[in-house]
Length: 79
Image 1 (cartoon, one colour):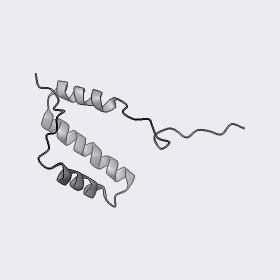
Image 2 (image 1 turned 180 degrees about the vertical axis):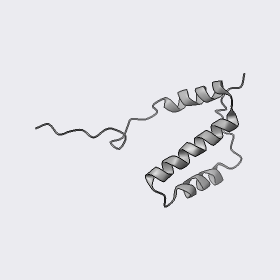
Image 3 (image 1 turned 180 degrees about the horizontal axis):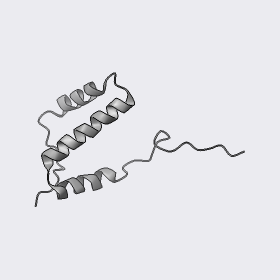
Image 4 (image 1 turned 45 degrees about the vertical axis):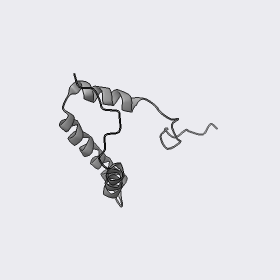
């Protein structure tokens, strides 16, 4: 049964990061979200194994740092 690879496995992590940030440059939030969704689906299709994908989802869904004000719904002022 394949497991999710958690050890560094990039051939060139800096080049990937540069390409990822470049594709988002000068794009609006909606277009960037669509790019991310397509990228996720392309990579999920490449992985293919449901158990590996579920493991990735579980790990990605774990909170690793406190939510920022941007991540939280707007609070209404109390009168």
